[in-house]
Length: 294
Image (cartoon, rainbow, N blue to C red; front, side, top):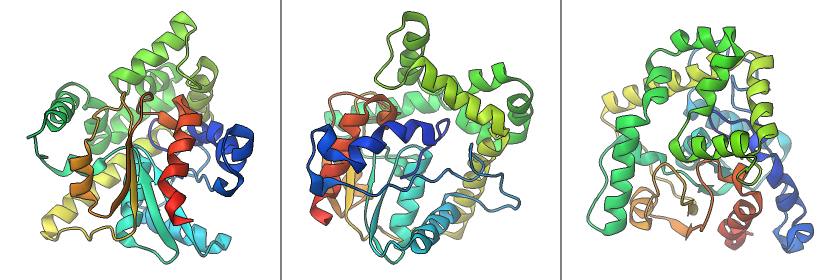
């Protein structure tokens, strides 16, 4: 299971209990998982890459090798945000042993326009357009000039916190309520938010995490220049849309990206940091998405 930016493995900690010991959290014993929660290269606990080329495709290959070395002959993968891109890449690479994927952010829509015929499609297209118009600044800066912002992220904890906390409107509102009103959204509490920022600060990984967006931007440009369409995803795919997500992907969009969609659900609460905000609900979605693959 892979975290995203500006998160870390900290955003996944509260799902460890529900997924590894489901009977203690209202689930069934047969729904238990072994969890492998790696830290993305250059993020928090992982060291800074010492060479170029660590885009999501290479991370996906590393994760497949990790699972092989850990001795798992059969496994599933899950991710949101950057983790969704890694999960998507693993699905397309189809390493031996991978039997299914689940994501909660449809990263494929960033490649180009999507259908906007139904009411749900038009609403999602409007949300995506708003993101590109007014919420895309951090993405563009890190994808094109990561070192510029990187100096500030390594020099000042205030700059680091400001850069990390202003991610998307829904999350920013929830973070503000946690600090100003003492009303956290689930486990998106003042303490865990500070823990996450502190992890980046103490490990000095603000700049290296930003560079991962630059790596992915270069890889995407090269892929487009090649004129070759990416391979499809042949393994079963599960997808959950959370209402507070930056764009709420309708089933039609998900099916267009993943024709082998076997599970789809629209959750009634949660946002971009779904595992962090609603760990019990998120765990239920993971169980449901992969139940048919047991």
